[in-house]
Length: 202
Image 1 (cartoon, rainbow, N blue to C red):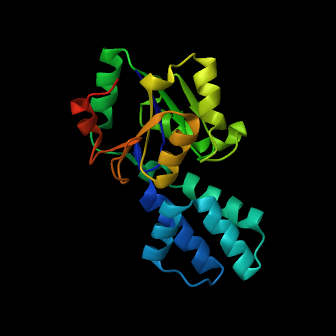
Image 2 (spheres, rainbow, N blue to C red):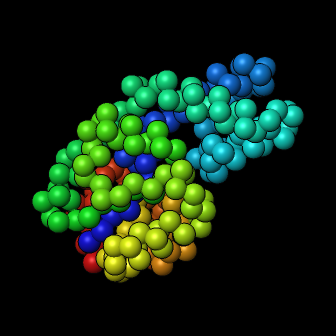
């Protein structure tokens, strides 16, 4: 059994930091900011999509927005916490001999967060946006992991919290486990990570 993980909203509770940083940027540039609308947008699409849309709508260089966002989120690393029961679940995977990997759109800042939260050791490899793979739902990064570690697709699951996480699994030819998306022939919905302990996975 192999688990490939999303990071934000799946392993770490980082959305408050992300949203606070976005709110600060919007206020800095005097852009109207609706917290709930921003949250819905980034959950449906991504932070990058939001920053690009903001760049276009308000004629602000995208790279400037992206740089400012990165600086602000890094400064709040100490506010990022683990999702419920993460250590308990990762300890279980270790006992069961399950291999864990991460594929996230987050930058290499993810490595610092994993280290500070003391869970880096659980993962055989962490792929971030800095690796240069095409973004989800493109399956390039997952294909890389499957090939490199000779993972069997029927024994590999992508665990996430957004529709894009389900879609990247579909494109990779593997199944998904998801905290928000409904169960289907290719996805299993869970309300928390410990629900996985009761699933009958191949």
